[in-house]
Image (cartoon, rainbow over all chains, first blue to last red; front, side):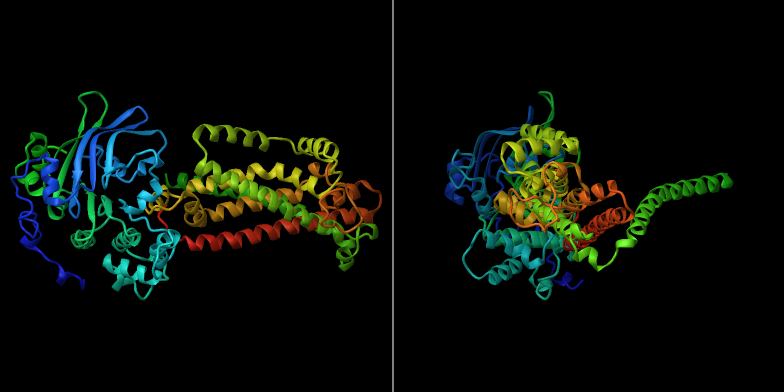
Length: 298
Length: 281
């Protein structure tokens, strides 16, 4: 366990303190006035307005409106089946791969409609990286996993440098630099997940979407990923879906709470509120959020 | 209780052994009797003389040429079709195509041969020819290749498709670079089965290939093609022990081709699997 001494513990990682504390006063309203947000944070990376999402006839998400701000970690929490994963996959149009799905409402990315008629999903996904629930490296070498997409996208620059840079950035370089030609499956689960992060970074995206990236990992591996996220936040906007409320509290700047609504028949995901993580976890404005975070539900 | 379990255990093993014998015995007896009957003509002259001189050189070359033709025509169309069905076709079109593929798979080979004769040989004026024979054989084995390719691609985990899509890789490159390596062993098995079937077919060739005592040429049209199953078929009908032995020798060589195909296929699938070992499926 050579990495253990480097673990930072205690207050420096709690959301209530840390460098972003003064940027995010806990008095921030849970639904922010866009103009005010823009003044303090720059334009939103994603702006989602009245999003409805359907699998066939089933309404999976109802009327979601939220903003994702640049160079922040936004976490999406909520009970199983509340549509967190469906929502995050709306942000890079990955749901396009599933036949019979339909989206209504507006999703803007960098000020432009994500679902516009002449938007090419493929080009768009190069600007929005994604890390999945289970590590899913390609059945290829460690090097090839990272190099594949930059090579196919004909990115400029030396490929070896891109691979090294990405692996360094994903805090994996030291562990794999002597066996870059080894199969990606020879790595542990946590290493595989960091390889998937390196693979996403190699395309030089603006955003990294993470769908429960630690759910298949042990606590030490989870910690390393969280540490990595803090570091990546300086350059990337990160959206993370997590089942783990402690994780949301530890790593994220803002938190959106989703829940399942059965009042109109069927199980539909709705967003209850979004706000600074410190506020959501200490003084949520909705009773449902409070019930969830205090463990009375879910 | 313990005796009962022992009894059941023994019964099960007995039945399994019986099933094994039922499979192994006929195969071994066929192989054995074919080789035994071929003994009188086995020798170099079998491979260096043509059918007008009691050898089968021209038939071996013709059969191999047909296999290459099937690999090119049915292999290309079949793999492309399977990939299209698994990765690109809209659901409704998939059902439609699969239905026709199944119909084709159930088509008696003699019917394929007859239709090949009526259309290719007669109506298109191709004559008995390499191309007509290859097309008829290809139609026959196409459904196998389509099916195995489609199934192999469907077995590749969706997570790989999502990973590729998440990186902004185009679908075509995803299929070629990401999905094909793990699917390759299945695709190769399908091709091998198709070639093995082609090696043993006679009916579609009777109407399309013709026969010739000359070695086959690469002429696609109007040149008849000799092949092994025809030697077995015609020489068995001739009087005389030597003709019968030649028929058996042709059958033995067909068998050998199939065995070599299967062995080569195994070798390739083992390699393909090694490349994707450890992948969480």
